[in-house]
Image (cartoon, rainbow, N blue to C red; front, side, top):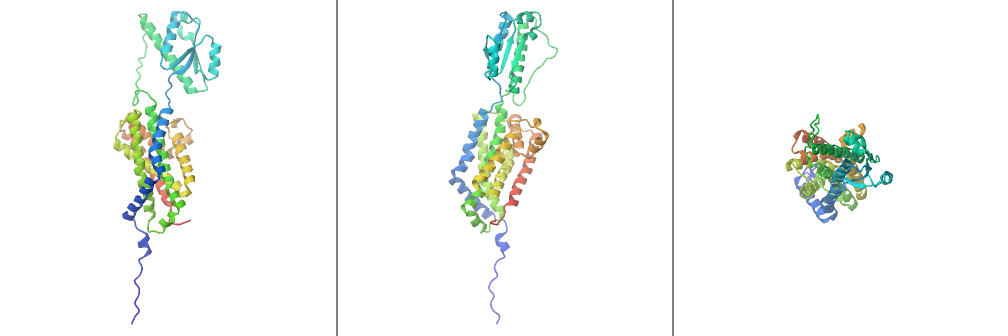
Length: 390
């Protein structure tokens, strides 16, 4: 009689391999519990975006208004006094009259003034003789070229407007060979906040997305729970998706909150579609969350992963995304480097949706490159993550 053989054990591949939606749902539930019990995740997702958005939306301002300039009037004639009043009435300048040019030069050297307008003693005579332009001297502080150009351009603008008004009052309006009519598209008010706030959202979401996932894998290693996970049938895909999906929902909630703050609190107009905004945000969060998850997988230490995430996310997003510094004015090597920065495409998409609307010719290329970068970071994380302890 042949001996009875014990039943064969199930193949190891059948136990440890194969994607399971049930296991994924259980892991996502576990990660959700950790989010609720960990106040830092709520702080990063809901408090930090609002604070950073207010700081970057209100503290960073490219509008040059009420620039302090000095004014020296050496002519007591009526034309000189009229032009001085026109200059003082301009909202672009905060005029500080002075008696001595040398005293104003000293204030200019100390940074107390950004420019000086001098009306020479023969201003009225030259104006009556049709040589008014040569009677004005504008001195600017070249240490800040943008402000210096602003002072020079606006002083010339006030001068041209005053000439037209004076000629019209005299009953002989001057005819210009060119009829110049300016119109600013997409941002008619020319308020820099309408341009900066959408770009700031891209920078803020880069930081938030990278920080949210930069701690999740490192936290498992530090607490010793990763060894327990590796002893289960959980696959690599299930483990990575469980670390991404809950924080994706958290990131989308932070994005919606940034949209509400930008539109209803800061008054930035939004002309695009919310659906397209969510689509672009989904692709971008894939890049940001993938970057944070990759750093967390590499470092296995929460402090080091968080520091790396801040450095790798914040600095490139701020300096190389085109939000503050024009990409076209950068060296050619840096221009090519910006093509690897997800915030460049997301900032461009946000500025398009906020200011221009649903312009597909601009939005689809941004979505394409964001999709490529999402595949790159998530794929790199999948290659780096292994079911081993070393």
